[in-house]
Amino acid sequence: MSTSRLEKQVEKLEAELKEKKAQIACGKRKERGGQLVALGIMVESVFRLLPPTEKARLHAWAEQLDPRNKQRVLAAFERLSLETKPPEAAAEAQQPESLTAVSAHLQVSSGNFVRPAGPEEKSHGDLPPDGENSFAR
Image (cartoon, rainbow, N blue to C red; front, side, top):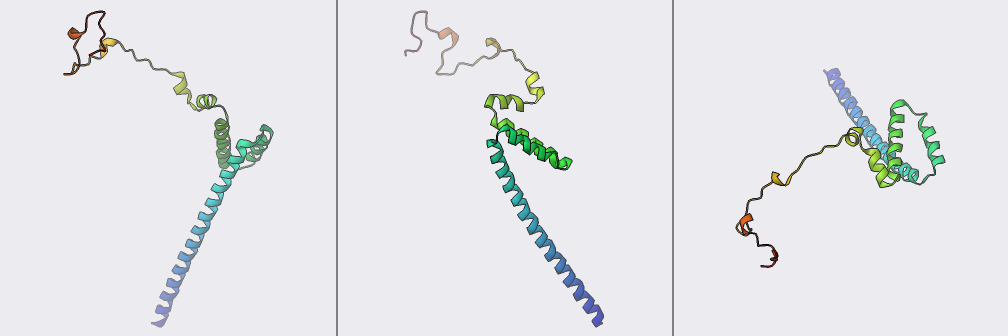
């Protein structure tokens, strides 16, 4: 019987150890994530100030990354490049082709909307004769 009890204690201690290791790993991942965000913020702020030759160097460094991270970094560089361009150029570049290539025109005529005359408003029959000031009351 004591062997069974010892085995249960060992299982319990192993489970507690496993949980503690998971908590430590989670804390380390969280810390690393925060460091990566801070590093990204720093790179973004520096990237905006770099001359084109230095930006090209960063692009070359991105080429050495694995495909997934390379795609992300190049997309970030593209976004940052658009942010540093004049607002008009950035707005045009950010619009998907479907939005810039298609334009919708809705025909509007003055007869489409008839506003009912309220108690304080004049109907068409109550318009002042020509020459009178319609704004004076």
